[in-house]
Length: 544
Image 1 (tube, rainbow, N blue to C red):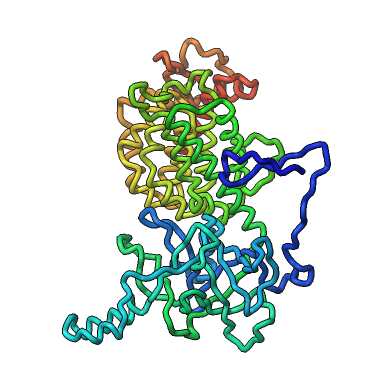
Image 2 (cartoon, helix red, strand yellow):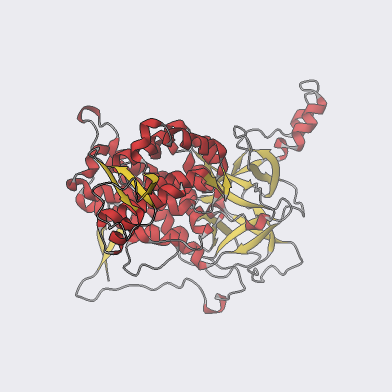
């Protein structure tokens, strides 16, 4: 191993390590003593969630109004501990004089909490809304006493608010753990302890509030958290350890988001290279196997089916902004690039030259479909971008397939988004392509969770049964074989029954055709392509 002087372009401040064919000198530094490595002890490098025992909420870091906020997250679930967000994962750092040193945490150790998804550190800064009670009491009559008291109990007891800072060398990111039971200071901290947090440089205690941060939301879920001078027993956090598999999943999703964001940027500027496109396609394939929670054994990626959805991985797709990047990829190639116009037009997707782009878009739609399966929150998130999917129906990139899968089991979304315009679009696609899958999509839109949707049923009847669309449906007739048998019928009279079921249809070239259903079935059995297609189409039509 050779430590080079060359700085990494993608990681400023870091040097490249490569290999050379001569001996080089390296110094090995101890990270952790062997005796510290115990499963039941809190160690540097452990990933945990901090669960506020009194409020029953997880300490979380997320973006709100383009700024990272620290808060306790409200959940609507019956069991608060099951509301496990990837944005509530914290990596423990045990502080030593040697920055390379880790090890077991003791009750007299100093700790840092690194937010796993962003790499930022938990810290505290002065609360601008804090008013010192003693200072206020010197100015009577400035404010109504009752209002002042009420305010004091809420916002104003928070001297410092918890924030996230980018660097671990910030002194404001140092905390001590205080045990809720009597412990010796030099004892190791058990892994699943209850602790209070003391902020070192301000000598204040972490305390919860009921003050919402996201006041502009209809239902606020972000509660402010800060520190005050008094230590209260009820302000205890349970340290909940996180399995390694969950950490690995977050790492993968986090990195995938960064690569896809770069891809969207390149597509927007129209500068994506063949290699970059190839990497993006490979990543989208990997993400499909990831969210489907099935191994990649070389099978066709678009034929992967989810039997039991992995809710945690589906949640990662939304929380780590992968779904947002997917919509970015679906939009970017078709955006106008100033004077040059769009890089790609939807009509071009049928051209063989653009086959890689078409495949990329198909992967995007399949990923959306897997991410929303049986998961209401993702369905609502994806439905906000309905207009994008709607504009891409009919170009063989699985947009219509994703829309019907999204709406099929969510009645609220179905009734909101399926209007006369959408039904007309599907009927026009059926006219253009004469493919039975469009009949199947319409069938899916009639029902949600096995319950009929009368509004959609009426709309479909209105369009499908209008005289103008009679030519896209197969007609069924009972024909008496003795009197009405057409001249071109090849069947002998003695073979025929008195009445036969005949199917009549009009093809793409407006040519009328008619055959008995028995004759079609016999021809289909002999693998006649046209007869097989007519019977399949008829079967889907009957189902609709």
